[in-house]
Image (cartoon, rainbow, N blue to C red; front, side, top):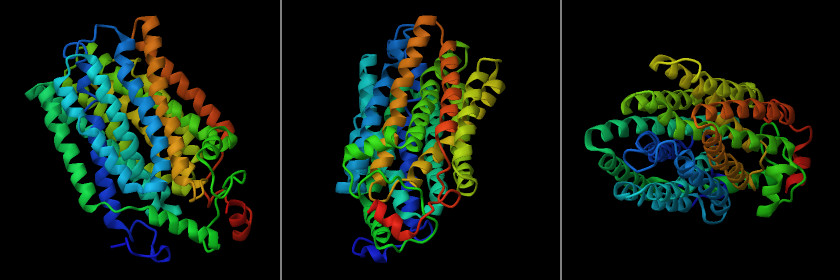
Length: 445
């Protein structure tokens, strides 16, 4: 329908592009399903099903280390590539990479096959999750960014939580390998079919927005874009800007990296920690699911909240609340307490997760926003790899899983403090640029 429209005829907004917005929401839920199937069953049964020796913490974390480095790198590639070949092709590449995953898990003779499957999962997640988020930002308005990313992550993490619970029951009924095979092949095939038939490329919307900026006909408050970057920057220029040259973008990027320590912990050590305490696979699925549901469900509100109160406060408080939830896991015992701790952790994540991304989008010019989001996501998901290494090392030298929890909690408190000091409010309405539209255009175009 929109493929032949000129840039000037394209309308931005959720309501104006509702059909595509809903398709992208369904896509990200299926992306969540794909990672969710690897989260409850695989770590809990790493010893009995896949031959990982007891207390081999470094070997156990290897698959998340691999995932983090691969997904981080692919986020970086996805953002840049999508500005050249379009969002839809990158999404399709991501789903193609996922096809062998259920088969590798099903036939896995050893843990190294699980690591290989997780490398493909990293490629899949880096390409697909990046594209669902970027595509929604392309077609929505600046004042809807918090809500847009909140809805995106809501759908993805509800999908992740559901998959963890569904696969736990399927594994109990059919066996771990058969359950994951059926669930995985169904999810990935459906996602590819829906992408081919119904998803549209949203790159023309991004170009339309950039053209309006260049013509000086943008409406609404002006963002405080960095001025020390050229109109059509190189990959290295955007990378250095997001990573260290702009202290606001750098503060957000380090917070993104450290918050992934939490998700690495939930992925690798929550199932092991709970399994060691005698919980059944479905009960572990439910506790990890509480974290996912609260994280996913709350983002529906926390993303929209930041469109009203700004990004900075939710981000800082989110880091600290999340760290407190991790520490709580060790302070008492029982299903109710562990579920409450998981819920606190999930709520902290919901405060920071969509709003760190929204803050990056706020101060990234449409000409290079796809790249900036990709680079932020590179640093953020590198946190899986660095965090999992940290978890493995601390658990290895102490001989217990519990020290990994303290490592993550302290990291979150310190990172939140760095964000508080070096970050600032990025919402254009709350902290807008003090210049005329033409001056803003000259400085960026």
